[in-house]
Image 1 (cartoon, helix red, strand yellow):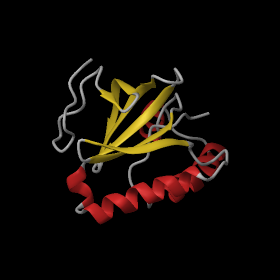
Image 2: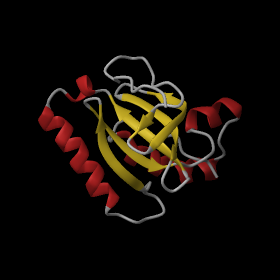
Image 3: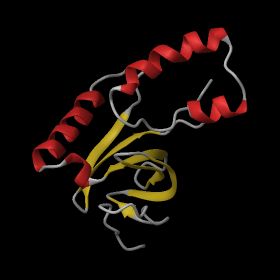
Length: 143
């Protein structure tokens, strides 16, 4: 088992790091608040997105508690346009949320490959606008 590495720096978690019962497979992306990793749920054997927030970005214990509260609240919803929350916790002082892993491209990758048609813009834009105010989002599949 790989040693646990604090996430309060910009150093990503090494492959093989175990956070609770999730083993880090690779870094998916990095944003202003933290990192998102592809991880394996060791209990259920499925791939998940592990979003680790750098503790200094939240500023206080109360802010960390609000983050965890929001994740727990989101977990109560079951809707095809809301990502499934599988769990929350804290790792070396940094809160994390475990999300459904959706394979595919993010919007930036899609736009790099080709321009979106009008129908695709109409389909994608409302969800992108709703998500813009919630901070960094995990990579999502494009259909």
